Image (cartoon, rainbow, N blue to C red; front, top):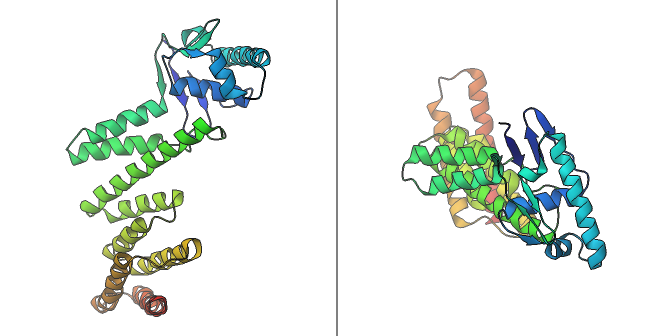
Length: 285
């Protein structure tokens, strides 16, 4: 039996046995399907759906538009050689997503993996579940749709995604997997660049991974963002972490006296960066 896969992270996508739909006839068709998927097995009154999709329309005009949109959705299923009736129930007064055949939905898989991560006390199992959840997040929920309910769900899933990344970063740090922790931290900052605790963790990770110059750059970026966007200085904990890296910088150079000239030059450059950053820190203080 053919299996339908639906993706709500990023632009709405449907695919089945090599066929894919990524372009929906109207944004209303995409939003209607998305809403039904997020609220399955419920009978949604047609008047409710009209008010959601066309709040400024008359009741008669709204019902006509809803009927047209449902017809367009049936055509979308036809493109995948599927019968819409196997997934959508459309009665005179209500519509519902009530599939009678198997399908997968990325947000359901995402939620299931987060639940699995919360339900285990085994670090490896938790990490595996979180990594699976993160891999499913291909972009913002229902990208391109901007009605209130979409924005609420988008924010909720974005927070859950960042939380999963944060937990993975903590797990990586606890096992001294600093390159992995750094990649996860940068992924968090790509979504939310003002997360000072993540900047601080990255400063520490760079230091522990023998990348002092990157630690300096991370602190400078953090301080600049906080000053520009919020008009504040880094927290004492962040400054303390940075000062620790600064104090270790001289040791790093001394311990590498027998490295190649190229490595020595890189270390000396890092030390000069430390000194400049230290001067900048004193100015901030």
